[in-house]
Image (cartoon, rainbow, N blue to C red):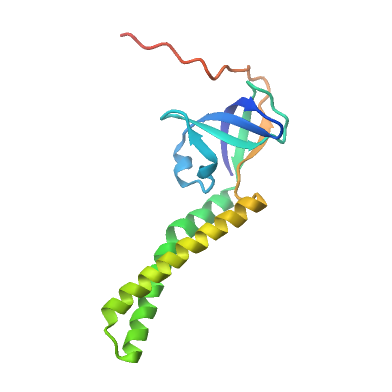
Length: 158
């Protein structure tokens, strides 16, 4: 399970905006579209406030590792495998009908790649509607002092 920590910056009826530092895990996260960057280092994540956290609370956010792996395979390997399969089918079809195999292979690969991207977009919409693959607030960290996220550290004048 991928676990990150952040500070609740804003709370609405059912949502919480959490400021967290960008980590290397963010690059492969399937839900990175839920985050928006406020600076080069910090992310603001909007998630369901299931724990009724308040502004300034330090919270733990988790994402199941299986979800991350499944999404990585779908996003990175799916389109490549579809393109290769489409190119093979295009070439095989061209040879069967006596057409030029190279253009048919290229067109088959492009058609399969386009289909894979359309399929991924539909899968993303369905998964978002069902709430799958979204990060969850797992706990409010005890003993952590409330932090004011809007304060920037002083510049280092060495």
